[in-house]
Image 1 (cartoon, rainbow over the protein chains, first blue to last red):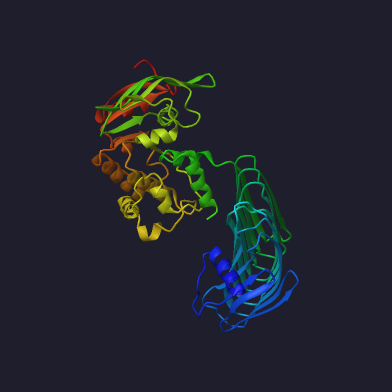
Image 2: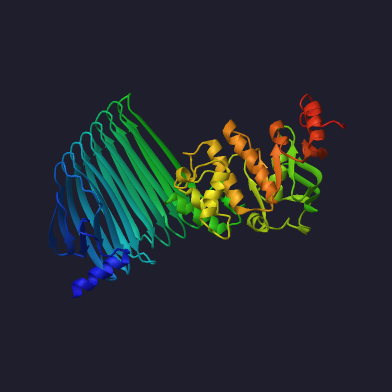
Length: 308
Length: 241
């Protein structure tokens, strides 16, 4: 009964309700797996320990999972720790997309620590979308550390979104090794408020010929929030291509830093970067003011676009 | 009836006179043009009337529907019915075309989006899901800007160099929408140095070096502009004539 109640509360906090039999889903509260439903070709094994869960996810060779697999991780109480050690393998020529909602709606002092390794095997594809839903006061420390290996002719894209609620402390660290003719695309979209501290480290190592890496960070900050974005692309192979894009809008007393690192170790590789940090662009602002929006409404609209 | 009156407007920046004692009356419901060579002060005048940053410290007055608006902010002026389309419209990463078109609309009916896009010759199915960002060409961006003005239904609109940086196809739709604005009762002020754009207007004002040189019916102005301005050596220094 208690388990059902927590599960409902968890799903309600992310606006998710009953799902059909063709949609795979896994729900984890603290160190307890509350629910799981799998589809053909998808294997999930879990093992609980004191403050968390070890999870093994595997998508079988040649399996194409039609609907996104829904993961819900979180904690309903105000205080606690959730550690997730996740090992994901997408086998040869398989494809899947995962949507992970991480929800801490009542957080006052919560740690959400994730250690993940993801292997995308030859010709396989994974799209991973992670949305965080926090309470208005922050109170969450998020430390996701992920290592991704993208093998030949494989694709991996990931998107980290934290727009609703205060971020708290984020220490995001993603590293990808990208082999021949494979692609990695990593995006982070975060709205920092109050005293949020955000540190993003994304790195793509383009090891294989024709590999591609794109790292995008769009951050909006207000109040006393602080963000540092370190994006790094190293291209070792011929015809490897990479791009780093960091945009941060800063309001109030907030502070932002961007440290893009691009390194090319083969003259046939090409890596570019762009970074823009500052207040809202005057021309964008004045355009919306000439439509009759107030300054606050205009800034809200510009930020909503940036974080979309 | 005048919708706008500019009285003794002088704007100085860094000890340079950008607008020199300008007096203009704008009749409601017509298409007007502010013409002149590059650097004449055309865009400066439009920006000053709109109240943009960097153009607010002037002497003289601006009356809109008989009321001084010189102390109003940009958005306050816009809510009275004045708006402006920049020569190079801003691009907004991630902002959907739908949201942009409805930004200045009080009654946010979604069918207005389709209507506005069709008016500028853009297919709503193709464009509604796109963003107002760098993936749009200059012509597409300008047409979406005009679609947003169409949806807003202002009383007075400044179009700054409406044909600049756009293809021939886009120019055709831009000229069409100018006619549509007039039909709907919107007063249009075209800021231009293009003779083709000047032809779309009923009446105009010729500026040179921040001074109003002459005004009048478009044919007369066109004659003056082509006959005297084009070959003029007095760049930035209009002679008495």
